[in-house]
Image 1 (cartoon, rainbow, N blue to C red):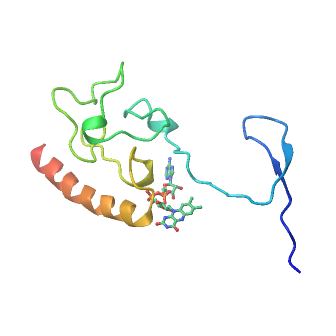
Image 2 (image 1 turned 135 degrees about the vertical axis):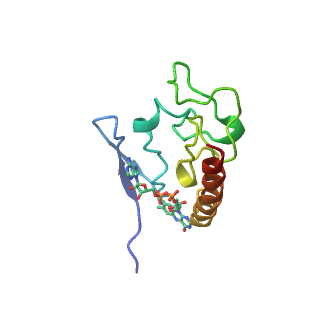
Image 3 (image 1 turned 120 degrees about the horizontal axis):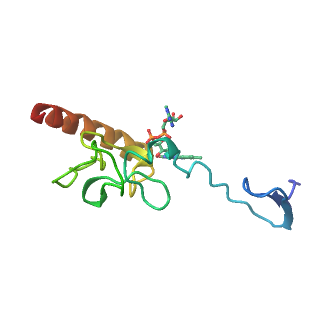
Length: 118
Ligand SMILES: Cc1cc2nc3c(=O)[nH]c(=O)nc-3n(C[C@H](O)[C@H](O)[C@H](O)COP(=O)(O)OP(=O)(O)OC[C@H]3O[C@@H](n4cnc5c(N)ncnc54)[C@H](O)[C@@H]3O)c2cc1C
């Protein structure tokens, strides 16, 4: 006879104490938080911290001179001129390997086009 799952001890990284809960099942969902704190002063992020691109990207208030002025960001381009974002970190992206790889290959083409314009 197999061993039954019956109890989980849950705690938040932001709170000191955990709670023990009776449960028969557990779904683990990890890897969903973007680590974008280091770019938030340079590119626009959504409310969850994912990088905005294309028509959804707008320069944050108080952005510096590198922020876009006078045009909308192009596909996969962030609010910062010539800076592109692909994969899981991009707001609205499909969080799957194939999508991240595909967006990466698209970005290469777009970066070449961008460099040809500057
Ligand atoms: C538990 C789990 C299971 C998954 N299962 C599947 C699945 O079955 N099928 C599927 O298609 N997808 C699955 N995914 C999703 C898949 O892993 C992602 O969609 C894919 O890895 C995204 O690729 P990425 O290059 O955008 O980001 P990542 O693979 O997350 O790569 C980002 C890289 O950037 C690095 N990095 C972060 N910050 C910095 C920094 N400041 N400086 C330098 N490097 C930095 C990170 O260390 C990491 O190596 C799963 C994800 C998780 C978490």
